[in-house]
Image (cartoon, rainbow, N blue to C red; front, side, top):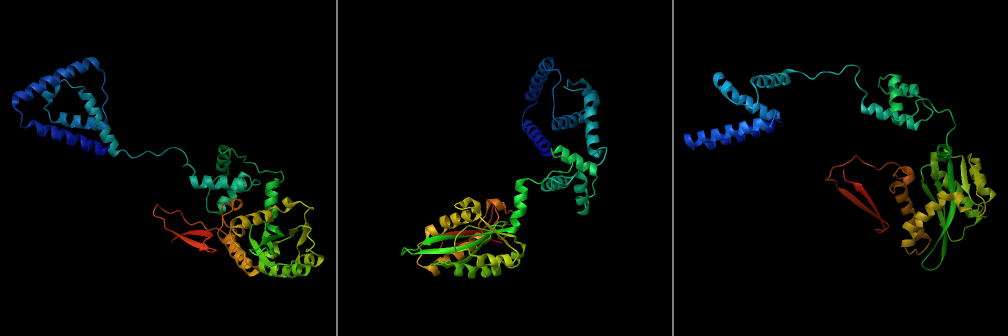
Amino acid sequence: MTFRLLYLILVRLCGWLALLPRSDNVKNTEILVLRHQIAVLQRQVGSPRLCWAERAVLAALTRRLPTARRRQLSLIVTPRTLLRWHAELVKRRWTYPRRGSGRPGTGPTIRRLALEMARDNPTWGYRRICGELTGLGHKIAPSTIWEILRAAGIDPVPQRAAASWRQFLSAQAKTIAAVDFFHVDTVFLRRLYVLFFIEHDNRRAHLASVTAHPTAAWTVQQAPNTLMDLGARAGGLKFLIRDRDANYTDGFDAVFTAAGIRITKTPARAPRANATCERWIASARRECTDRILITGRRHLQQTLSEYAGHYNTHRPHRTLSQQPPGGSTHMAPADDNIRVRRRDRLGGLLHEYSQVA
């Protein structure tokens, strides 16, 4: 608005400078024409509306006229109106913003945090959420939490019913792993078999080994190697899902049973009972083995090891909120001048993109 006032003053000054070269007769004639136009407008327009910048210019120009001459002019406003405009300018200049009555409103950060806690913890009531916020350093009344939840359509009373199937299965996923075989045919028409394990919680895949002749003894030998690969995470596992392949013998089951892991067998000819493994096999074939000519066991071992590294550390997963199994790789949002580095894996078959720091 200040720029508009300055622009209006500049336009008026330019108009006054344009009057200097004119003669007095021309100016007097122009004044008579303008007076006649004002008289016509006053008969047609009852109360013209002026913006504050136009009011300021009109008030300043009128103050330059003598009082006697000011009374004789036929203005579109009255002297009382000019005084009122001036009083409003003074009021706007010296009046400080008024504070609203009552307590200050709750900030958006606390509101968002309270709603997030309520959605993540259905068994928490508004008093439990208030206590959690107090522990984080936010002093807020329980009644305020109650109003925030009610306004968002969330029941402030804690949910006493049992957890849903989705919540139950998500909690159980941390204790479940699965094992399976899949085969790959080489360029020389030789069939190789791959044994792998996968954790249900974070979808982390563990490549056990590759062989052309899977036997029960070979499968039992891979079991302790897999437990060593899992490391400390093996202590949290309680169930291992496998099918009824003849290579899974009692010796294979005994290795995991000794570690406190219970063996769960899937029904016969029911691949959907081990859907997590089947999904990883589909991804590995579509993104890796179906796009490369495998020459032998060592070549397949190196290829799948490289793919497993990409799968565990970079490839996003919808079930993990577009995060890889190894953890978050998202960086802070960047501006339009973002620089991205590309890393090629498997000879350029896979591409990984990362933001340059």
